[in-house]
Length: 45
Image (cartoon, rainbow, N blue to C red; front, top):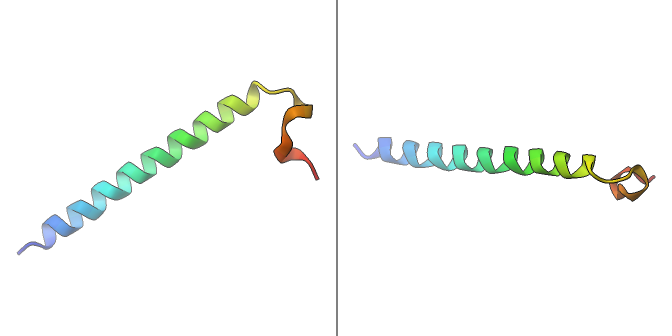
């Protein structure tokens, strides 16, 4: 009866969260290309 609304709600939340994750990763990769290699702290061992 109301399970369609529950599934739709979870589906919408998953799509929104997935979109946010993809946009954040793409922005991070774009910004990391603008840095000099010596400024990229995530590459340090």
